[in-house]
Each structure stands twice: as C-alpha cells, then as structure tokens.
Length: 103
Image (cartoon, rainbow, N blue to C red; front, side):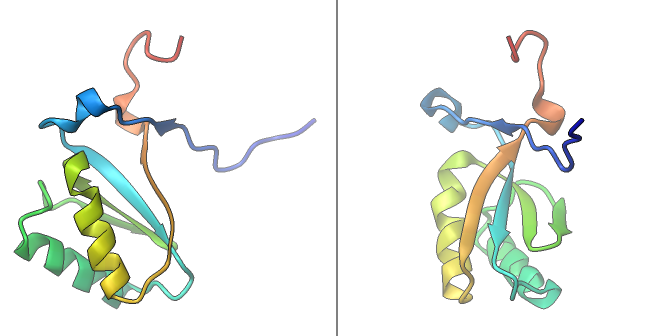
C-alpha cells in the first residue's frame, strides 16, 4: 500500500482568468533561498504595487503572494535579479476548489 505525502493540486490559470482575479501564486526557488531574500522580494513587490494583499507565506524554498496573473512575469524578473533560480510557479487549488470543478 502506498501513501502519498505532500500531494499538491495545481490550478491552471486560463487566458480568460487573466483579467482582474487575484490568485495566491507560489514561486518555488533554489535551496539558497532565505528569509532575508524573501523579505527583499516582498518589499520590491510592495514598492511596485504588484502585491494585492499583505499576505506573504514563506515555506521551505518557496513563497506565496496574492497577485494578478499578468504580474507573474514581473515577479519572475525580481526573483532573477536577486540571483535566485526558479523551479516552479503555480497556484494551488487550496481555497479555490469549487463545486463541480474537479469533474
């Protein structure tokens, strides 16, 4: 019997979703990612008014911010300028599972 650990359901953001809906977008980075770097990225995003709430979650080698999908490239640019490598960019279903959406 196999048991899955840390299963992630990832939501696909479609073109029609690109308008004004804010998503909690997670950026998985390399192992050199530290809290001080995360704070610097957060401050840059706040300064550029990219973040749409003050919610900022740091976990292991990733962080999650509430942004518009069209801002993802700007966040990636800031991450790259901080010298980080990106291993993934995604939105978890988490609070976004709607009735009938997983049919």
